[in-house]
Length: 114
Image 1 (cartoon, one colour):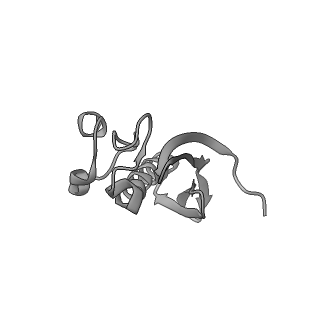
Image 2 (cartoon, one colour):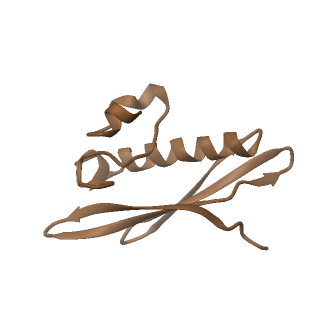
C-alpha cells in the first residue's frame, strides 16, 4: 500500500518540566475512499504518535475536518489544557481551528484567529 505524501507540517513548542521539546504535526494529502475522501494526520508527541483522520464528501471537506480535529486533539490534550503547548509560545495557541461548539478550549492568539 502506498501512503499519500505529507502536504503540510507544523512544529509546536511543548514544555516538560525544565525542558522544551517539539511536537510535530503532519497532514497527509486527502485520498479517495469509496465515494468519500480521507485526510490522515499524525501528532508526533515526544513519547508517542497519535494518528487520526478527517473524512469528508470531497477532499476539501476532509482536509478542513482533519484540521479541526487536530485543533481539538491538541487543545484537549493534557499539555494543551495545562498551557504547556503552543505554536510560538507555550499557552498562546496552537494555530489550528476548532468547531464552533468547542471554541472555549482555545487559548491565547487562537481566540482571536478562530
